[in-house]
Image (cartoon, rainbow, N blue to C red; front, side, top):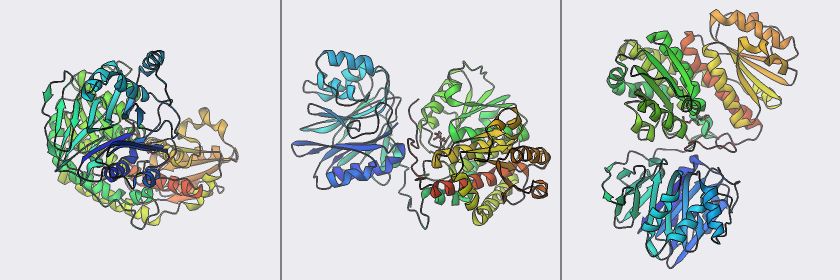
Amino acid sequence: MCGIIGYIGGGNAAREVYQGLKRLEYRGYDSAGGAFLNGDELVVVKKQGRVEKLLPFIDGLRATAGIGHTRWATHGAPSDGNAHPHTVGDISVVHNGIIENYAELKSELVADGAVFVSDTDSEVIAHLLNKFYDGDLAYAMKKTVDMLEGSYAILAVRRGVQRIYAACNKSPLIIGYGDGENFCASDEPALAGKCDGISVLDDGDFAEISAEGVIIYDGDMQAVIREISPNLAVCENLGLGDCPHYMLKEIREVPLSVTQTVKAFAGAEQKLKAAFAGVDRIILTGCGTAYHAALLGKRYFEIFAKIPAETEIASEFRYKNPVIGKNTAVIAVSQSGETADTVEAARLARGLGARVIAVTNSRRSQLNRVADAVVPVAAGVEICVAATKSYTGQVAALLACAFAVAGYSYAEKAGVFGNIAELCGKVIENIDASSLAHLCSRSRGVYFLGRDLDYAVALEGSLKLKEISYVPGEGYPAGELKHGTLALIDENTVSVFLITDERLAGKCANAVEQVVSRGGRAAVITNVNGVPEKLPECVEHIILLPECEPYLAPFLTAVAVQTLAYRTAVILNRDPDKPRNLAKSVTVE
Ligand code: F6R
């Protein structure tokens, strides 16, 4: 994973790299660093912790070029020493990806006398570049990447050489073209407001970047032209407004995410319908929260389009030799469009002849490039690592797809989405999850339970709570409780039941009884009339949501469980926006 940025030109390179790293921090934030061409010197600064830690050390530099890195540790603990850049001799390197054969390479280099100072896989790149350098860093880069197995986006600089050298394979790298200055970065948002044109490098490409221009080479070192397209990343107002955290701000943006997504869907509808012509089976795939959105999408396709649908966790799907025919549609759901497991699953499906549809919040991503059709999620930039508004945007996009494939026109169903947005707004305004959050914060385990669509949201509620509060727990189908999980229940656990389908309400109420009669603490989130009266008196917390059709309820329960997770994290003094050990965009497998 990790984010990398490079700048060369007449501006203040240290400031440009720092600002780029701030915009890339969502890709990892356990350490950060930069290497700067500062007159005749190569200045390298690297620190464990957030990007801000670099500022005092680079503020006074007058560098004309620099490369930077914000890290999500894969090999080697977060520490100053394992932070990038890695420097050997006069060459400094930043790397995003994983070098799978680093152990063999390291042994060979050590046998040749190389001394390693970090536990990272990336350090081998710096050693190889130093070994192969004979006055031409482009040549050394080619020789180096010929030795590498795995995924990489690499930037390198050398003291005294006014150039940045880049190479990539299966990790994204884009070039940004400015006026008397040029950039390279892991993704487009890092270059928001910085340049008008960008090129996306292909796997196997190299680039030699100077202030005056950029030369791109393919894997055979033949100069090639990569299309320059407009830089779509805009400097959105990414302030917190009156919210203490981005997570709260982004939960409040859920209604907008739904309405914007459905508006954007109008432009994608025809292409989607064409991609679905003749489809008789659907596989929905994604990771984490995106997978949970896929679970709801599966049910929407079954309910409305009456097409058999399955879900597969993207990281599992790839290794299952999936049976796919030409009438199978594979819907890959991903906020970032860069999740390696999801992108590779989509690539595999495409290779096997499936129609691939991307549902993504990114206008330009690897996933978009693999897909036959793209259904946009228009949630806007999501800063908090925990997905909130992008999840409801994904669910809205999948519902819109199911309606379209079922033959409903956009106009026929526009009102449904307006209704969802309005009801979500009411939940956001009225929900009080504080006392339940206090209970969760003191508990040993929190179990989220529900049936059918409520079960899908229960999984998401559980993930959200674990991810930002670190309170353990699980999401379970409410009916499965008695088949094992009940053994975990005692007075130190909380079971949160989601009950939004009248047909299943009685059975769920039985499960609540089973919990409380074993001394467990129980809470219920419901919008079904009559449910509160059916519950045992000792159910301490009942959160009431507005009534709606059961298929719309996931939007409302999603906001409720997101808010519960947020409140619990705040009580426990966790940073909900940057949970430990995580990163927003997971570009390694
Ligand atoms: C959880 C969360 C993750 C992501 C997952 C996939 O809050 O955000 O579980 O959903 O890493 O990311 P995308 O959607 O970018 O593919």
